[in-house]
Length: 434
Image 1 (cartoon, rainbow, N blue to C red):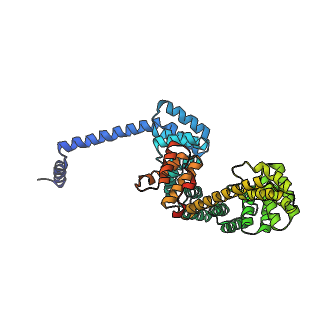
Image 2 (cartoon, helix red, strand yellow):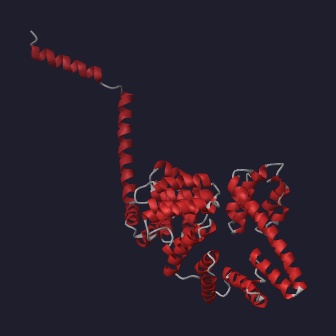
Image 3 (tube, helix red, strand yellow):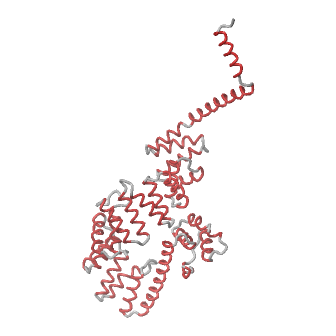
């Protein structure tokens, strides 16, 4: 008779036989175990080998950038093609101010991690490589929508490419972050000023002063802020308010430019003695200050001292940047002084400068009002090339050159940019098409 205990043992044995794996499956399982073990060993070896890279990351987190660079270079002596190590070296370089070398390394290996991408974007921005920086900045902001540094960089990058509406969108988001309200208003005002909206710029900067009356700890120095604010107030017809801001700027840093604009503000209020004083002080700081010489020459003209006006303006006569106002004063002075030959020459010069200024104004209007059009993009490339940023100009212009019906001016512009040669004269622009 089979006891219950014996029956249980028989059933257990039968169950074990039924659960035995086929021979092939057993070998597969063993193979997987061996592969997993080997993978673990290899992973451990890599982890051990890359210990210096983790140390580099910690140094970067602690802003010990020189030490991070030294350790990254030491690792790269034996692992010269190691992508993550090269990226860490690039990160250390950009933080040490070597943006060109950092950008070149990022071009080689890319940016795999978010930390890599942040420093890569920063390297491109420092190199004024706006086209390459923009998609990285936009991705980072998408992942970190409330990061003030990223929003500021994105706004600046968009503005450099003429995308002011989008730049203002990022700036407004930046200004909404706690602790960054004043810096955000500075950025908004600066973008508005670049668009020619001085009234809106003044409104933003007034909000800034309500938050930060000393205009301290901003992206620019306090004296520079008060100078920009004062100049904007003067441009919108508020000379008294402008004098207040310009005086604050001069108190912090008495520059020739600030004194020249302050003189103009006093003149707008009819205070000619105060204006003359500021302009003379400006010339003591910078004998070539055009606005000061022009202001003093105008005062001399009012006193019928035409020779003195000519003497004041003569140092500006050969400057390629002489203003239409200065040229007009010279033309008037020579006319009244009876020098008809020089008066005629300056009359022609005034007309030439007028046409130049009107052409530049037309170009500015296209860049501000129609940046996404074919002409807006072409003229953006022209401006970049003027500034010596040939690579960015060539990248931006490339899509336009694929159009078989492109205008001859754009063809000449493309050839000049490609050869890094003289740009076509803006007088060749079909202004009527604008």
